[in-house]
Length: 563
Image 1: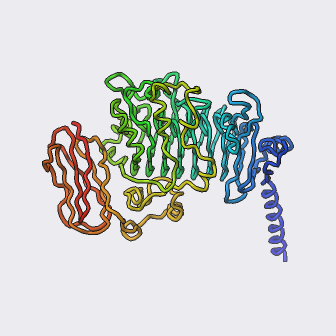
Image 2: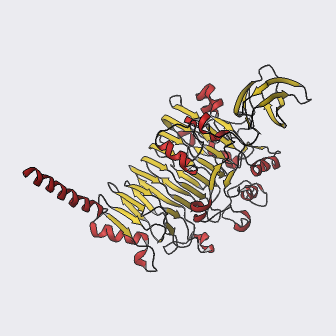
Image 3: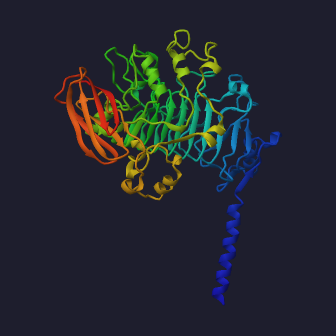
């Protein structure tokens, strides 16, 4: 009998404490036209009543509803602000222009500022301006999340951040963990209120960060860098360290890359960059003549012969202790992106090398396997920002300067393909064809890039599974011959191709006058994805062509050997 009474008491207590915990979820009201329903006004009312954020408080926004925000909420040290959606559909928070200030007009400023406190956001959409009003673009905010004291943690999952002129996340002080997963960062930059050096995903300034973790995210329409960690005032003095850095299974698409793509500053014991997919991710390209852009590669010590800083997509301050892992990454240049490079051969503007000289040196022989160039298109993405890139180069426009805001820049003519938040939550689709090598060549046979675009495989990946390439991957539908990588090369390069059916196949290399200089394959081959290594150590510097013939298919591509 006593045992039954004890069990009953335990159940009553468990129910009581469970109700206490569930009572800590506070559902915030969508905006109903009254000031009391502004987002931060509701949070402030709760924290005022409770003398701070309750330890187990979770602020819940109604799934799919609209919230307006007119002021910044500060999170003090030892507090954690937790905010999430009540369901699967993201609610939208608009930064709404009824605050104070004049440039932009009446901005609320950042949404959240961490004064040593921490932030956890789940399944929320945030836009830096009130999208339903076209003219509200002139009020676009500089950023959404900032830190102004040491010790903050930022954890973002399943969120959409869009429309800022500076950066979505900025850490002005040393941070512990900055972790972004399963999220979309979009529309980074606005020349209406800022310049080309703005428009970033995450800006660590020159502060230290114990752990930077970016996994299964998509970064789209970025004007500058996805990650900025740079000491502008004294580049060679460096930054605080990113002690641990993991950048895995992300998709980077439609990025101008004004000052690079991943500017990582000083790094610590380990950097892992794996299984990512880059499509027009450094679209403005490498321009050794451009002093404005190359200025922010000043921490590498790498120079062109003309004295300007060497431009690569990914770079750090050099050191000899970091353990590097850079592998299974893929990149592609769209037809529009290649046409931009072709129009600017005179400078010349080139696609550039994904890795700095220092990182390639640290990787050694593995540097040739770090990135593979492929040809692919994504199902539904915004247009590449070539109008903006051309305006920057135009002597009557940007003239290779950071001269904005300027009356010379006209939003309707020169802005990126800036879509509203619903496009990114409901329409954009960064999936790609199974015929592309990137589809099966990430670690464990998974697709490269953000796996959220492939939900079935995402679940398998989360469970720690492995894709059976031979049995689990369907045969390709079409022939394809990929661009060799690296290119230019010395003396070896890899050539990949796809056969939809078995047959006699040849892969040969020719010089400029049409003489065959190497036969890489000549025989029966099975259907599937194939890769061969070409060793040109016995050949002279110059342009060469490689041709694939199989069945009725024939295709030729150009490559450059530089010794």
